[in-house]
Length: 443
Image (cartoon, rainbow, N blue to C red; front, side, top):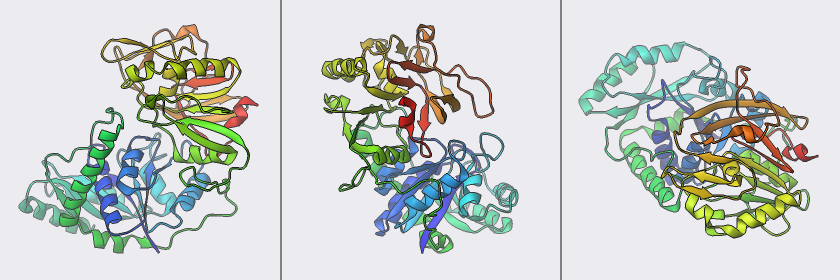
């Protein structure tokens, strides 16, 4: 038996991530092995989860992956856990197309009860109508209870408890208005200092949850038999790169950049790579270069613009990269990884920092604006699906032709490019290949 539930809200900004971090830490304090999940393509909240829970968070996304795949990876990663906590994205029913891709869809797919987080700031009994609407809108989504956030006083909470009772949903407690428990900016970069701050924040929120939230009741309401992996599922078990002593399927040597500048990667993608060979991580920020004998290089996204000075000073890596690429070494570079391969990045301080110089383009944070959305393309015989999220821009995108056309979630053509130079495949999109062999792109 395990505790399994989703955490959702009526809208973004309600405190889902704050509550999730604190509850993960509170459950961990009780000696439980806690496996976190995240609805949607977000690769930042998953890192907050990982710090709070002590286990890598896994994305569950029904646009980037099939329903069968989502069910299978949930079963795979939840096996052996005492508690599985899935944080939703945006509002409960918000998806890329009506409910498609929403936390509600994931909850139905995996039969997860939902804990609602209601932001009660400047609200009182009227939240009864909101709770009732969320409860009845889709009978297949089971609301197990409500936790209120931003509660001003015990008197304020009494109105909210009455609202719950009259809406027919169980009250599970609240988090009082508390200075200093805001989640750090998503654009600070996950340095060791920021990771320590997130861990300390998780403890502070957990203290509040232990005092004001009915954690034992949540455990009681959401305990169920853990599903076992389906032997007929599309994905076969793969060794996790986070565990030692696993034997890869072949001797392929795979290098993955991983540090505060290159930290946006999907857990399932890394486990897929672990099926193909032996993964070795290296840190460009620490002056490290590509491991000797690398057969495939993965440069994930992250925050290269925040560490442009440090990356620019790693001249050895830049030279080794150019030599590796000119020798037809295979490279997949996504978003921040692609930015590092360019001639230079103009950072937020206005300074132009030379980068690896592999691609004949430059990136800039000048006039930065958000580029966001699901992406789909066909290339190299594969249909690729992923997600674009960045503020930087290519200064002159016409220098390199795109190797394929990318489309949004509703089929609209986008101007997002996929670049091909020798055996380098690069672009702003973070691809998800949990159901594919990404190495087929180079065959």
